[in-house]
Image 1 (cartoon, helix red, strand yellow):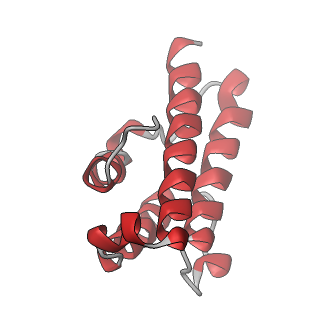
Image 2 (spheres, one colour):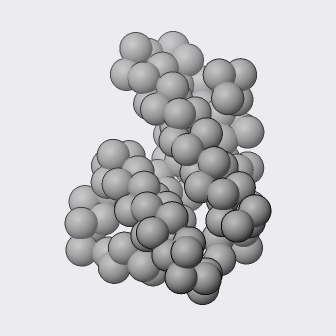
Length: 108
């Protein structure tokens, strides 16, 4: 995950909606809630002032917010600024966790 570029990160979040299940078996409900919470927290981390008011289960709205925030960030500045580098690393870490959650739900 450490090699993901800003373009890779944007692509990941643009293609994520169809991969997030709307319903899961009882065994995976905790994982789905965890994934929704992780995405919700990420929208807040990226600075969406309305993120706190979002329904955590409204994945499409949360992902839309994340996408808008990523669009606003200038890719060149991500590597140039210390804060941008931290955000980039945080996004890489979250992508790893989100991918792990999705994998666990799909293999159950």
